Image 1 (cartoon, rainbow, N blue to C red):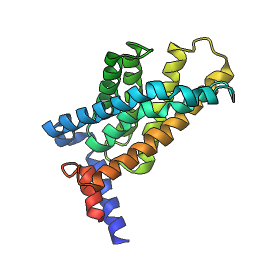
Image 2 (cartoon, rainbow, N blue to C red):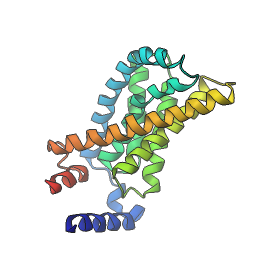
Image 3 (tube, rainbow, N blue to C red):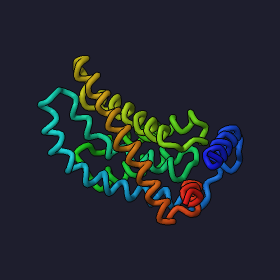
Image 4 (cartoon, rainbow, N blue to C red):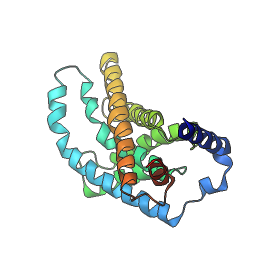
Length: 215
C-alpha cells in the first residue's frame, strides 16, 4: 500500500511539472545514442516484417476486407518503445521516423513513402505522450500510444494506398490497425521496455530505475 502510494505521489509530481521542466527538454548524449540504437533495432524488425507480413496478410484478407491491417503493429513499435524509454519530447517521433528512413534506404516496395508513414505514425504516438505531459508511463498510456499510432497508420494508408475505398473497408481497416497498434506496439513495447529495464540495461534512464526500485 505504501509503495503504491509513494509511486502515485511521485507520478503526480512528475505530471505537475509537465512541460515546464528544463530537464524534460534537454536531451543528453546517452538519450540520443540509445534512441538511435532503438531506431536501428526496430528498423531491423521493419525489414523482416516487410517480407514476413505477406503470409498472415494473405490469410486475413479473405476473412473481411480491411482486416489485414491487423498486421500493422510491428511497424508501429519503434515510436512507442522510444517514447517509453527515452521519455523526452520528440523521442517517439525520432525513433519511428529514423527506423522508417533506414527501411526506405535499404529498400522496400513502398519506397520513399515509407518515410511519410514513419512521420505520421511517430506523431500519433508522440501526441499521446504529450497529452499526459510526458509524465505518465504506465501500461494504459503505452497502449493508447500504440493505438494512436495505429489510427495514424490506418488513415495514412487509406490516403496513400486505398484512396476511393468504400466505407466498410475504410472503417474495418482503421479499426484493425488501431487494435494491432494497441496490442503489438503498445503492450509489446511496454513489455520490451520492462524486460530491458530488468536486465539493468536502462539504469541511466527513469524507466530502468523504476523497475529496479520495485525489486
